[in-house]
Length: 224
Image (cartoon, rainbow, N blue to C red; front, side, top):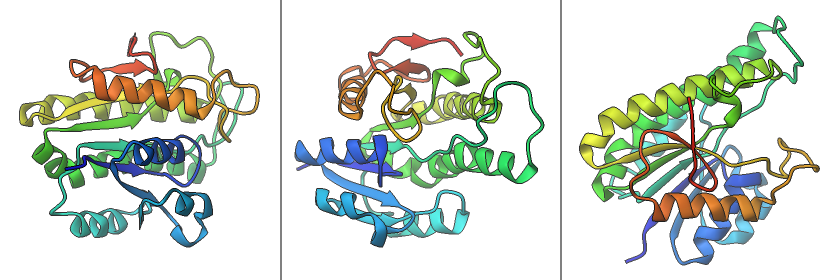
């Protein structure tokens, strides 16, 4: 029986590449996006597509109810936004900061709660797309302060979830995908989405001892 992968935020970039690679290897893939009718490239992949807006609890609750009987071997939370591209410490419009935190932190927390039982049933993994920019120990710039703050907060959610869900046999980890040529990473980035996702899949699938930490796409531990 094929394993099931839930990819949240799969209409482009890394999420789309995760859906392509897992589907190509015979996994049952459930891919979410806010507007399925507009997800032309995702529809070409041939996966099950579900509507989901991670910024609203009602949308998360609706999908959780729809999938309540599914066992999920891997949940990949890829939904996220960068927010204002600032160069240093700057005041930010409240609505911009709130959007970044709601999307990058509150959404993943709600998703963790909504699908914990599904992943526990399969003794699977919950994987969250974080960033080295959220590492306080390695921070050397104040650029993108809203994004940095949100990823540091997400890392705290991941650690807390690992402490609770690890007791149920669920691995929980945050991944830094590297500098990837996506809309967020830009055209000068060093990795293609294919290379980045292949590396992260190896970390997810092969390194069963990785839990409760932030790792890059090679499996190397990044300090909080």
